Each structure stands twice: as C-alpha cells, then as structure tokens.
View 1: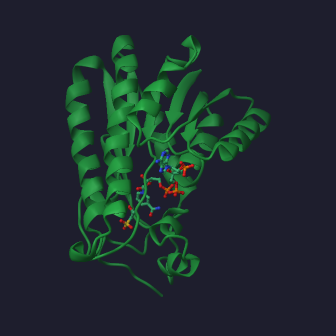
View 2: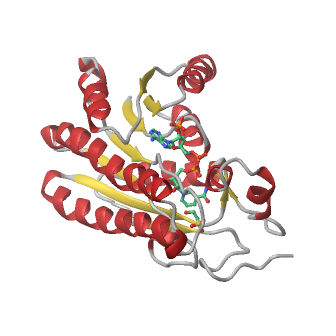
Length: 251
Ligand code: NDP
Ligand code: 8X3
C-alpha cells in the first residue's frame, strides 16, 4: 500500500483525488484548514474503501504550522510516496493599479510559499528513500496571462517554474515530478475568487460545461499508475469548449 499526502483535501480537486486514490492502493494523509470536512472525508474513506486516513489540520501559509504538522507524523506515515501540491486559491480580479494587497498576499502565501514550505518538509523524506512522486496542480494560468488575473497568473507561473526546477533537483534521487494544468473547472474556486458572490461565480461557467474535480482526479490517478521508469511531466486539460485562457466557446 502506498501513502499519498494531498494538500487542500477539504474541497474540489483535493477531495476528489483523495476519494479516487482511496479506491486504489493508497492510504492517505489529508490536509486543510476545515477540520470538520477532513473528519467527514476520513470517515467516508474508511467506511467505503477500507483505507487508512491521517488528518493534518493546518494553514499552509504558516511554515511553523507546516513543520509542526509533518514532524507530528507517526513513523508509519512518514514513508510518503506521493505529495499532491493542490491547496491554492484565487482572490479577486482587478487591474494591477487597483489590486488589493491582502488578496495578493493570500495568493502568494498559499500558492507559492505554501507549496515551498510543504515540499521542503516532504521532499527530504522521499530523498531519504530515493523514491517518490510530486504532483503539482498548476493551471493554464501558469503559461498564459489574462486581463485582471495578474497576480494569480504570476503564482501559477511560479508553480510552472517550480515544477521544472523540482524535476531537475529530484532527478538524481529517482523522484518524479508532474505538473497538471487545468483550465476552467467548477469547484469552490470561483466562489472564493469572488469572495462569496455565488452569482458571479456561476457566471464564470455560463454556457459551458466546465471540467469537474473528478476529471482532474482521474488524471492524477493516471500519472500515478505508470510503470516505475515512466514520468509524465506535464498534462494540460481544458473543457472541450475552451482552447486556452482567451478562447471559450459559450453557447
Ligand atoms: P477549492 O476552493 O474547491 O479547493 C481549494 C483547497 O485548497 C481547499 O481544500 C482549501 O482548504 C485549500 N486551501 C486553500 N487555502 C489554504 C490554506 N491557507 N491552508 C491550507 N489549505 C488551503 O478549489 P480547487 O479544487 O479548484 O483548487 C485546487 C487547486 O487547483 C488550486 O491550486 C487552484 O489554483 C487549482 N486550479 C483550479 C482551477 C479551477 O478553475 N477551479 C483551474 C486550474 C487550477 P481549506 O479552505 O479547508 O483550508
Ligand atoms: C484557474 C483557471 O482560468 O481562472 O486556474 O485562471 S483560470
């Protein structure tokens, strides 16, 4: 049985991935700030799929909390085979001159610094064993930039660069690094981006069948199912109605 640590498993892609991997040969470490949701997920996986689940409840923006959480892992949970760097968010959509500093900090601290903090703690456990797989959830916003998306796009460009950097640094240690870049995908993401405005969030997907969290979970499961000698470096996935950040075929 392998162990996967999934950040941001309380919702969306992270939660769907936990449920998908639990149907295969994985026990899971699930993380996030909303403890009640982690406890529900643990119960669901234990009952439905008979897999073990360990909860780590922390805010990924705090290096102190990240270090404490990973240091608290009992010995059997420290043999982490897979790290899914998924926790992330977009907050606000503004021209740069109108940007909200707190929004910028939330995005940079979560999407960039949070990924660095957790990778810095988990990668050494993989290096020790000369084995592992890091799956980074990037975005099509990591390779193109749209109006008002400035800082979110910058954080996902950072994820794109970090994925390449990690792959080079991990090469000698037999550790795979995959970046998955989804396009338009309906989760709680847009509700958070629009600060709770459900109407605006819904409009993001108007006239389009977006991707769903389960679609990305399928891809993650696919990259984790490859033979030992195969590393899938990148996957970019959009709904059929989306070519890239600019062209969407709305009905
Ligand atoms: P959701 O909002 O549904 O899920 C986000 C997850 O991130 C939650 O579990 C949340 O947990 C966690 N998270 C956010 N902030 C923190 C924090 N400070 N500490 C710990 N956990 C945190 O969104 P998605 O599933 O859509 O997003 C997952 C990833 O996919 C993100 O990196 C996003 O950028 C990326 N993505 C999303 C796309 C989309 O259109 N939806 C498209 C492309 C990429 P909690 O709040 O409980 O802490
Ligand atoms: C989320 C997709 O297009 O809103 O990463 O940036 S997009």
